[in-house]
Length: 288
Length: 288
Image (cartoon, rainbow over all chains, first blue to last red):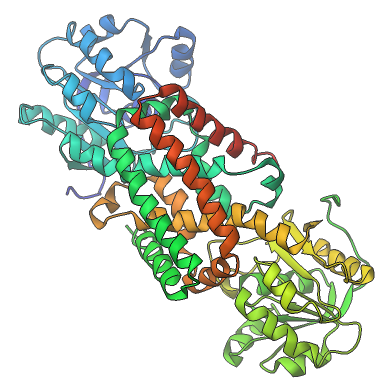
């Protein structure tokens, strides 16, 4: 795995980087590329010209365009930061207008359906920067979002080594560590580390009755924070990875069953053991 | 419900307050009482003389004693901040040594077993300050811990009104809002707002495999933060409230089932609706 030290580049890595979807991830990537002078020009693409103008005023992008085909024709690198269920369609449209050698990627949190759908598009390699915030949108964008975080690259056997290296350099240049996995391995892992936690937080929040609101403490609030995320966005993610997420539900159901059996039997040793396992796993994430 | 503004008192409310268990809660209460000059003397009781001396050096208490009976004989108010499965025994020992009119209470997060076990002890009324931190012990103690947080008082029909008023004043004097509930209503509510969330966070943390650690993001970390809590402490809490916690497990299992059914059927409307309900509940906790 590459070292975490921030690389220094004496010249821009790329000429024109086009970012489709200037929200938290797209806006932060744009900001990081501009601030570190890693691209000569960053173009934002979106459906709302007013929002793009706002992104330009905020200093996130150099230029905003509502026409994806026009932007594609100007691109050296395209990064699709749209909701996962809209990536493949956008890539396909863009692919018809890019010049040869353009690198295309995305930032979606589900990879198999996207990588499969555009497997025939030359220059496309999937990626997933694991970075986020409970805040949404370009107002939460910041150039430090990716610092020290992990980015998963999901090349196919047909992917060009030179393009993969270029993609790896792009994410590392904004401060990320990178790892390569197959799209399906990625989806299986992220079901457990991201999609299931979101679903569980939402299910837990869903059990709260209005009269109990005043009796919640920091524990309830921490555990359910991500349940405040955008339902539309997460509906797309969960459905795109439904099979793996359902396997995740089975896994946590198994642990809930064990807790219930131990509590019903008044078996302190078993309850303690379950809590110890949870604590050990959680503690293992500190100092990482 | 009392107003949230901080009350001002011109003279100490109580002469000698004895706090049994000088950890996060006990230590913070001691600090708050001393800092606001709400008691003439705060005595800490524990089994470890070295730890008590440390608490005294930190300025949390005026005096540390390892003999509960001795401390009881000096007390005007006693607050048991020991693990829930040790409160009733301590109250019973202390009750044999207190002078008439002494107020006894606790800070346990389960109330029915305690209040039932010591129902015949004059002057005892249960309470539960809903305040905490993922940090443990007296080193995390701070006098602001209770500011604006909720404290549940659980009097029995036999409780004296004057003692209840005195208890209410004690918690309000350190910045808390208060509400009265029966012990069993409290336990039913806290099963959903505190005990179930802890168990679910632990179960979720328990599903993490070592190879997936590097692929966790802020969502997983937030959702599982409380799983790092002391297993011994939480084992006691969960077992003391086992029946209500098991009812809570059924409740979240119901929502997980709904998610699974919706995902398996590819029913976007149903997935979205579940996520919207979770988000609405979570959002309702903001600005409270």
